[in-house]
Amino acid sequence: MRDAGHPLDDPAGDVVRWAAFSCLLVPVVLVVYGTSYGGAAVATLGLLAVTAACRVLLRHSEKMQRVEARVRSQEPPPSAHRRRHSRGGAGNRRVYRGSDPASPQD
Image 1 (cartoon, helix red, strand yellow):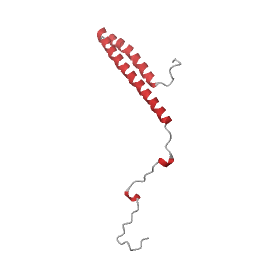
Image 2 (cartoon, rainbow, N blue to C red; image 1 turned 135 degrees about the vertical axis):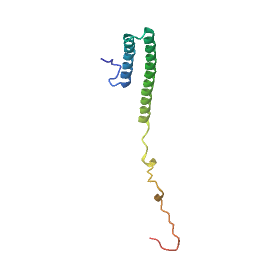
Image 3 (cartoon, helix red, strand yellow; image 1 turned 90 degrees about the vertical axis):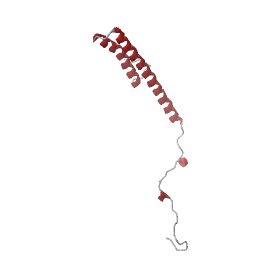
Image 4 (cartoon, one colour; image 1 turned 180 degrees about the vertical axis):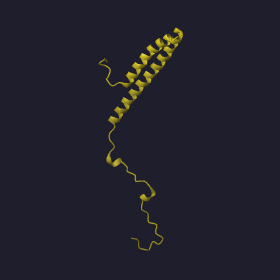
């Protein structure tokens, strides 16, 4: 059961919890399969360092997403007269290119 302080949909928290579980499980499995206690301790320290770095990066990413969403919600919508609809292409402009200016054109 989760704390009231943790939202139910927290993918970064789930990743960190699984990583912490792995940090506890991996050294046990290594020792059971014959790795020395020192080797298991080194593996545990490495996993802990990677887990901590990932946690920091995930939290920073979530924070930046919240800030970006807040900024987007505070921006005023673009006004109609500022929008530009380009139809592109050179055929957009009508230019008279008649060879004889005196001849009538339809």
